[in-house]
Image 1 (cartoon, rainbow, N blue to C red):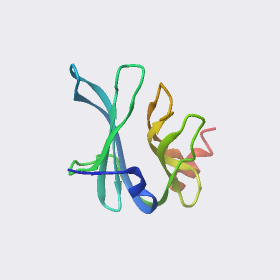
Image 2 (spheres, rainbow, N blue to C red):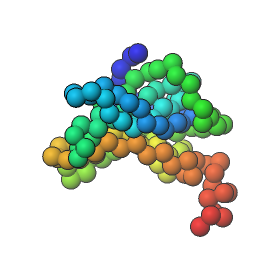
Image 3 (cartoon, rainbow, N blue to C red):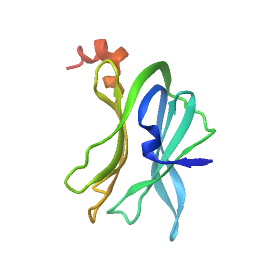
Image 4 (tube, rainbow, N blue to C red):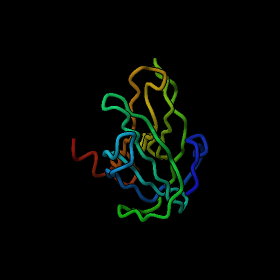
Length: 140
């Protein structure tokens, strides 16, 4: 399990799968539920896990390369990873943009990273992929 930084994912990639889930993780007082997202870039599977912290705050706990399978796969599609510009209270979020639509298809990280209440971000928007545009325009 190789841990990586979000900045390591900046640049052009081929996205071919995304799964979201919830897992029981070890925490300070035992175990608790945490959101997770697995995604496939350039045939490498990455997993990002939430640290739910105390119920009011959360943040990206870690992102790492894993050997787990991703069940929601699709035709490989070119995306560009860019770090999101800081919000009022800062952020540590990577956004993946579809190269054709220029829309965000995947966001992962921590918003309000410099605030008292940071929040884990895990947003998968498949309707913004180029090959979903014909479906999107009929579902207004």
